[in-house]
Length: 325
Image (cartoon, rainbow, N blue to C red; front, top):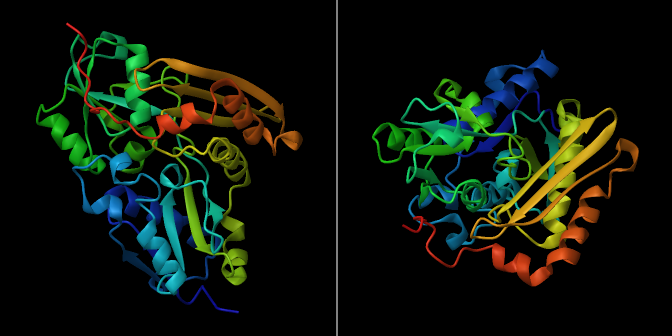
């Protein structure tokens, strides 16, 4: 058995958020293994396909796994022991040779609005305000709420996006609350959207630890860190996307949570014009919830059909939106 307390090599993206999430994992690891030395842990920063090109939209680059492929390659080569991932960016179809062995407790799942004005509400934004986002989901949801706002594609890490807001390139931008909090930038938040306004992407706020599936020693080593409720709810959300063959770029909001020993699952699907074309909220006892995501996925397919879902995966027209005058 490999002694991971003496040497553990972690692969992660080089962004500030990715490194912050890696530190969260390491803190959790050292808390569970107090006899483990921090010096025994090596962090290797890996540039992914999604990091190399910050000008092209993710869906136009292929969309699936753009922030994971190079890390996954290094895991399989054995140059790193594990990879740290934002689970909202991960494809639902896992490789047979790789698996998420550990889920850290999910953080705040919501979306936040950052603005250049003193507004305390999304509804208070002036007509024709320019909103920046790189997400097709957020684009459709914003258009669903307000057709009088301009939307422009905004890529880059969180610091880059905040800098563009500060430079007045945008009137407002939308980012995840979890990412802002993990970078201690939550003081910049002007407004937090409710789930009824912007339902998050599947697994938003969750961190996953990926390993070689055959490495049972490492899986056993990570087991004490796994947050079972996060694993349960996030797998339900991923089951929805897998069932309908959608990906993290699709305009689909998903959120599963536990309340009074019941698992509640909420799903909203939008078209690219901002119209909500499917919405459902269901719940089941925790003990009977394993197939909840698959059942929701089948309900979506029955209501919309696979061809409609397939057309949502990519935005053929220009991402930028200007309301009709």
